[in-house]
Image 1 (tube, one colour):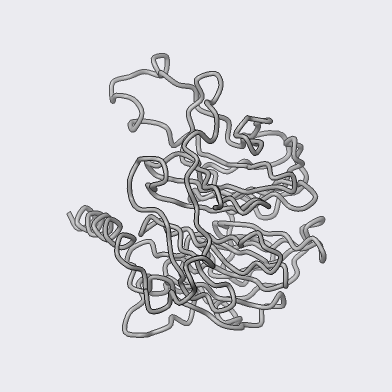
Image 2 (cartoon, one colour):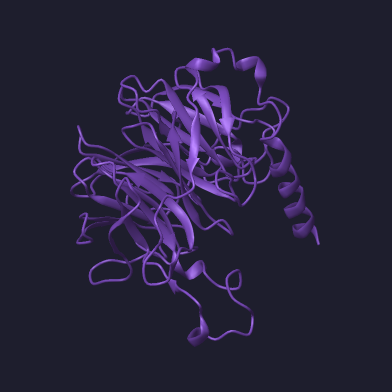
Length: 368
């Protein structure tokens, strides 16, 4: 009964938080200076062969402005069919885990699943396409402690970590339910938000998988302790809760989403802490900072934050991380969100989002 009560508390909060005026005292920018977006209800185009997407747990944009998603075929089930249906009676075909779309929403290719030489995750999570068009993925199941690297056509290149094995937040070889990935191509390093179990950012050589460095909240050595997942009384937790996303800006700053603690912390590439800001600080449950990406202008003036509890995208000034506005609300219509999980931006400034749990879709928002 306690878990059911908690679920409805979260749903109630989701239904109101992004429909109120979001921290208007911080929204001092002229309206004409703040980016605005309009959903494209016809993107992507109809999937072939009666495909149906599972939970879309990751979205990324490559150098050609192609949009990549990773979804969870195994998440399809009772939400889509009746409890007495058999596998032979399913009115759909689960879509492949990895799908590449062009800018118009046409499928370019798809692949994914278990293969020789690597351990495909039990529950797919993040996806990132680096500037050399290599595709990185992670998983979120209990035993998914690995990150995989593939060529753009699905040829296996590298695995970091091993399923079912984890060694804590100061282990230099094993991971702990890693969530998201980014690559610093200049230094040939991969940054991993590690993650749901471990409480750190960890960096490896992107070619060999050799360990480089890691750090926890405030750039300190991480500790494997449970952090408060709800920020209150102006207390800043000393440790990360869920390290759900890591993004590197063009000017070399590292932005880390500490999801359960409703905050973003900013670092230099060596792990030196710069500053933090809380986003929708009173958000309970799963927290407010799920994923981030930057605006497409040369200075990356804005940063966008996917908030899967309040069901919206926050628009922040990157320099200060102050909220300027938001778009979206809970709902199933085009432009609304049901468990938004990720956000990615193309070179034209358009935003793409993925939704998990019962959302199970990808959406495009056109930059106006």
